[in-house]
Amino acid sequence: MSKKPSFTEVNNLLDIYQSCLTSKQVKIMEMKYRLDLSLREISENLKISRSGILASINESLKKMESLEKKLKLISKREKIIKILDDKKINLKDMKKKIKGVL
Image (cartoon, rainbow, N blue to C red; front, side, top):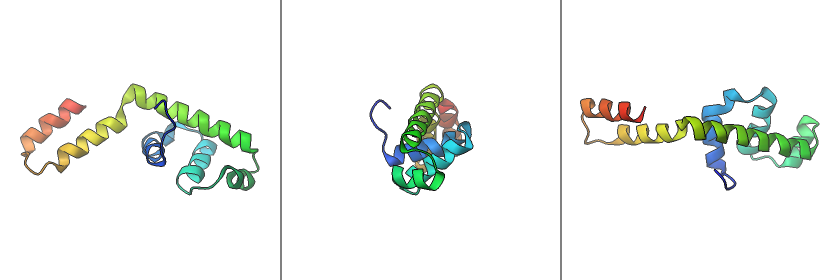
């Protein structure tokens, strides 16, 4: 993601890759992207400078985006959901298609 990711994109990254972040990074990312707090509000709550909060957010995004670029787990999840939502496909074909994604 070369452009600034949307809240939805960041939340998808967090769903998959938050375990790869430090507990402080997770807390900051959740406050920003799940609770929609401003940098000032996060800074005041955690007693960290706004520049420190922004640096943590940027580092977290970079790490999660790098992992997604390598592993493509979000892309795979979306493809699998699409296969599972296909009402016209039988179970045998569904298994084949899912194996193809993985």
